[in-house]
Every structure is written in structure tokens, then in C-alpha cells.
Image (cartoon, rainbow, N blue to C red; front, side, top):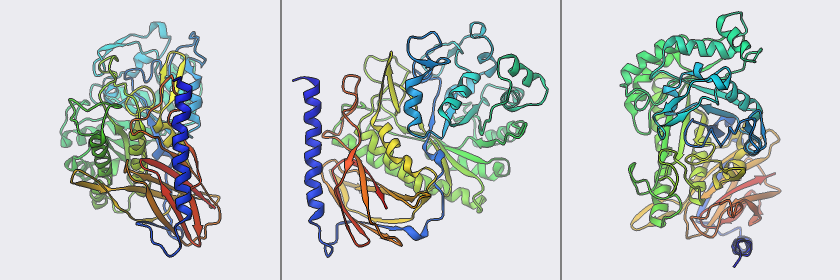
Length: 526
């Protein structure tokens, strides 16, 4: 059987499944209460979902930068000043709001002056964190900020606290943003950039509790207060200063930072990675897994709600006006590297399982948008839960990419509070909620509802009620597949992609629908 015929059969099965669900939805009467109920309070929305919640992260790690973004001006791969066009065009379709760089762990061993000037004269270094490979410094400050301009996004630069000096950090900010006659300004001009760049976000270190120096919270708090002093605003540029926050559960760290640094920070970070049943030594395969691993990932992903609540509770204790933002600037799934790939490059495939996990994360960030003002998935290309995978001149997008594309309707919209009552997804004596949802209203008045069905076996009948609005026209899109480990490959790049979703029935203020197993649906309501 050819690949093309197989692909058509897979989508035929999905189409038949959706057709059956559409018929089932129309058979739900207005008197019948669905087991799953979502009430959306359209008239109570007040908080804006910051576009930066849909941000991205690119580290000098594996093939994220080199081959992923940077191919060089002389490459046969189509590029603009060395930056590959296909990846930029794909990311622009997501309305990418912000890109974080150069790390990650790499940030605290990166010395920016080695990455400017003529590339042939830039010194090389060893990337000690990721594969012990040679870092050529071909992609540096000018290239990154050129990339941000091509993407049309804000720049988030992570500074070096672990092995760098205060002077080095001060010089970098001045080099990028100053228009005043000075040594750093003139050095930038000498290197080909006359006008300063806009650098909106600057992180004072990264994971300083671990790879960024193995510091205690108390020690880093003192270091933060010292270093941030020299992150100054030049020539009208206004920097959001970001303190290094905890990795997953470390409530002591955020407590100390809020106690000691709250008057000197604009935001604090949080990192949270999830996996299935494995551990950090053996995290499990990205593509070869069973329902036990699927259930474990759903359960571990849902913990983000509790993690955000507890961190925000501590922040509220010291900052009740909520001046300081919470940036989840590293998040996503983390699996074992694909067999045959270089150790330390963190190249992994990306399945429907990852897509559902991403949908849960984004729903949680939307719900907490009153404090969560940025989130950056790790990472953009060829590393961890990537948007795009490249192989020479070829590029494909992943199921997670499609979730970001479907969810982009929430960017800048007003979050709508909701109440969700749903059935449990049960597996071997354990259970979690079977659904995750969030809703928003955009500036045109259109309502968008994103819902994930975590259960890989059972469809979900949903009774969705809009309080304060009357739905007239409802359309939708869905991301699902026949198998839980379905993923896109260079041979089959569209194995998992969005499709139209029409399994809806409007009855008064209610929208009745049925979600297939293991699916992500975004409804548009007018």
C-alpha cells in the first residue's frame, strides 16, 4: 500500500468518526442534560490574555539555532541574511509575539562580545551543556535581533549571571539599545547597525538554582538585586526586568525572591516540564507508548493548574496589586532523544499526545492571565516540543504547531470566566478530569472556546451555555487522529493537521457538541 493511499484512509476514518459525532450532536434534545457542562460568563470578562502567553524559546542547543534558524547566506536553502525563510514564514502564521534567546542553560555561559563583528573573526567556544560541541558564534546579537524583526516579534534576551560580570551585562544592554554617543553604541555602529534595537524583555540569569550557578535562593536574590541595577533604560527603550524564578515545585525560592526583590523586578519566571511514567534518566519514547504513558502525561500536565495557583498565592502575599508578572518562560513535554540522533541535542518527535498536553497548558495560562503574562514553549525548532522539524532543505510542522495556530485567536482577547463540570477519565484505578477548556472574546465581539478531550477512548458530549450572549453562528476546527501516537514525518507531513468541525447544534443560549476521543477543538461563536 502506498503512503498516499494510507494517508487518505487515515483521514477517511477521521472523517467518518466526525460525521457520526455530528449526527449524534443533533440528536441531543434541549431537555437532555449532557454529562459534561461548560458555563461561560460572557458578560464578566475583564482580563486580557497577553499575546506573549503564546511565546517561544530558542536556545543554542542541538539544531534549534543552527539548521533550525541559521543556515548562512551562502546556503542553497532559501534564506534572508542567513536565516531560513520557511521557518520564519511558518512562525509568522502563528502571530509569534516574543522569542526568548540565547538560553536556557547556555545563557549563563554565553559571552555576547564573542558573537559580534565579522563572523570569520569570532572566537569559538565549547557548548558544555549541550553535547560538548563547538559553538562557532556565527549566530549572535545582530542575527538574533534581525530574526526578531523578520518574525515581527518582541525580543527576550537572557543575560549571563552564572559566569558573566555586571559590566558585561551592562555593556550588552547599552550595545543593543543606546543611541547616545558611547563606546558600546559606536561599537554597534561599527558592526553595521546604526539605530538601536527595541529590546523589551531582559532576563537576569536563567535557572540559577541549577545550571546557572547552583545558587541558593538567598544568594541569587542578592545577585539579582546587584545585577539588575545595571540593566538600564537607554534612548527611550523600556525594559521589563525578569528575575529567575523556580523550576517546578520550589515554593521557597519564589517566597525568598518576593520577600527580597519585589521592588526591583517587573516579572519572575517559572519553568515546568512534563513527561509520562518515566524519570529524568529515562523519560520514555516520544512515539512508542501505551495508554499508561498517555494517562500519566495528562495527569502530570494538569498539575500546572495547582502549580500556578500556589505560586500566584505566594506572589499575592507580597504583591497584592499584582504589579509583578509571572512568566512561564520554559514549558513543555520532554522525552528521550530519538534513536540515532546526537546525545545532548534533545531532538524528539511530536505526537497527538504532545498536542493535547499543549492545549491543556494554554488553557491553564489563559485562565491565569491576570498574573501569567508570558509563556515560552521549549523549543522552537528541532528541540523538545518543537513547532518545526527540519532536515536539510525540508521542513515540517508538528501537531503542537497546529495547536498554537488554532489557539492564536485568544491572543489579546478578553478572557471569559467559566465553570466546567465534566466526567472523569479513568485508567487502572486512577482518574483525572476528562476535559480542559478556556474561552475569550476578541475585539470584534467573536467568542472563541478551546476544549481538549483528554480521554483517548471515549467521546465527550458537552452542553455549553453562554451567559450574557446569544449564539447565532458557530463554526469550529479540530485536531485529532486515529492513533494516540500519530505524528508528522518528512514522508507524511500532514498525518496530523486541523480539519473543519461541524458537530455542533445551537439551542437558545446553548451549544451542544460532541468531541471525539483525544482531540482539541476550537469553536468560533458569533
